[in-house]
Image 1: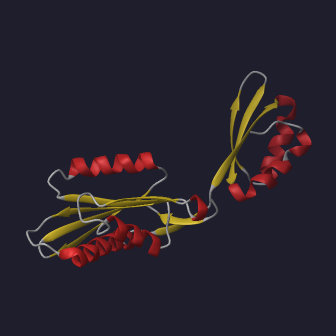
Image 2 (image 1 turned 120 degrees about the vertical axis):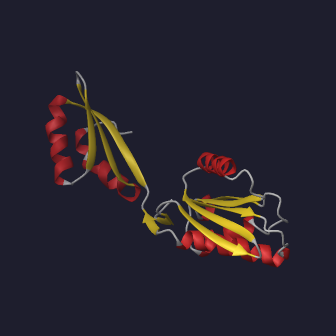
Image 3 (image 1 turned 135 degrees about the horizontal axis):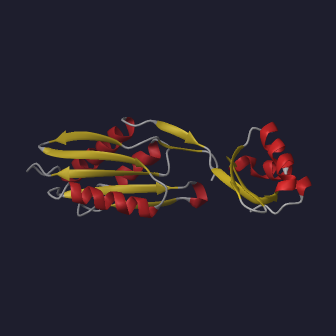
Length: 196
């Protein structure tokens, strides 16, 4: 995935409509397992909530993956408007959950859609949207005879590196933007080393 926009941190919101309370929670997220853990955590924190509705969006374009959960609300009255807010803010790798405490007055389908949309929107607006450039890591083993030359290339190019030393040499790990991966590999081509 190329550069994308996502949330900087967790944020919350509260929207009230006819006695019902809609607590919005916005999270940056990297995979479905994180999402499941967050949803279990919300269920434990809010055992008396009537509904915990949510949406998740990972990736973009052909690599997009999403989930929606109406959690007992009428079909597409909660998960779809929540997902719609993630999309309208042009972010990905994000999850929004809205915890509803019923206030005694039914809102009707359009009222529910509006309430979930507003709660999700406010949770996102209470956050900071950041641009993320995907990163990659190059790893290779190098003998001590070559280590000085390798470190010289690393220093000249201001590369982010970590080293592990052992008896025969060192294991070098270089973190870089995925877009720069091939160019950085070429810096080390003259050394005839195997890069993973």
